[in-house]
Length: 180
Ligand SMILES: [Zn+2]
Image 1 (cartoon, rainbow, N blue to C red):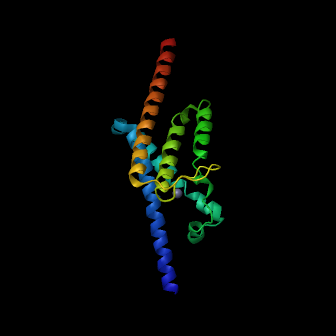
Image 2: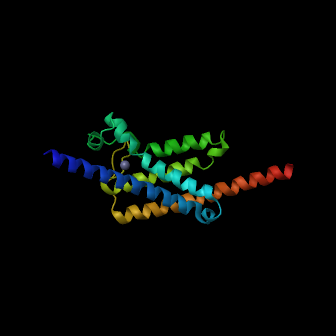
Image 3: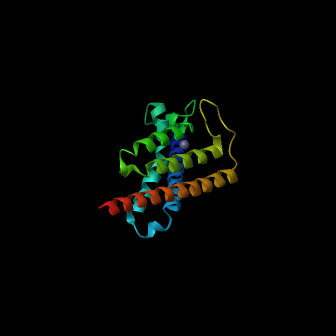
């Protein structure tokens, strides 16, 4: 019995680790596409990918927050989905970060990083459980091909937004240099 429980606990741990690493990998890959060829010239861009990986995996920390303990069994057997898995909070947080970045220029790309990492996590989870759009309810489970399509769409959309931000930043910098 003890052995069965140990093996069950071990397999839960392995599954949780593989799941978190996959979330991290998807988050990093989406951001790598956003950075694109800039990755070849600047090691800091790789740090951004790593940061997105951590952000994407961090969504599942709410399992432990909701369980009120670090026990994996408790965290995996919650009665309802924990708060960070509510997709409705993503646009709200992106908007708040977007406003905040005007006061902290070094956070220029943070709203995009947050959007790609958290939404990629939510879309992957939706392949099993649908999207949770509180207070409106749940969507049905997303088929695998739709999940992949939405991830690709997210990567392209964010890449366009990123290019626009970079262009705007460079234009503003040129104006400052002209004034000097
Ligand atoms: Zn999750």
